[in-house]
Image 1 (tube, rainbow, N blue to C red):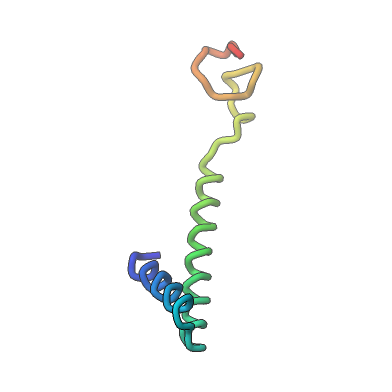
Image 2 (cartoon, helix red, strand yellow; image 1 turned 180 degrees about the horizontal axis):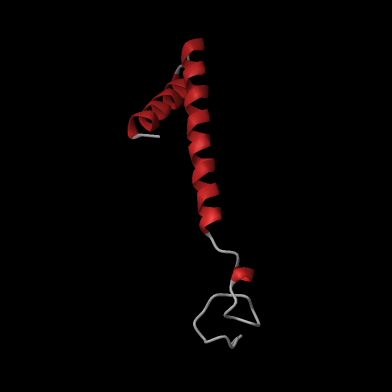
Length: 75
C-alpha cells in the first residue's frame, strides 16, 4: 500500500459522501479497500507472529515472563 493508493481511497470516500460514486468508482473503491485490508491483516499477523509466547521462556520458573532476574521469579 503506497501513499497514492491511500490518497485515492480518501478521494473516493469523500466523493461518495458528497455526491456519490459511479459504478466504476464503486468497484475501484472495493478493490482498493480489499488491498488495504489485506495489508492491515498481514501487518497484524506479522506483529503477532513476532511476539514470543511468554511460556517459551525458560528463564523464569514462576510467571513465564521474560525478565532479567536470573531464573528466580520476583513476582
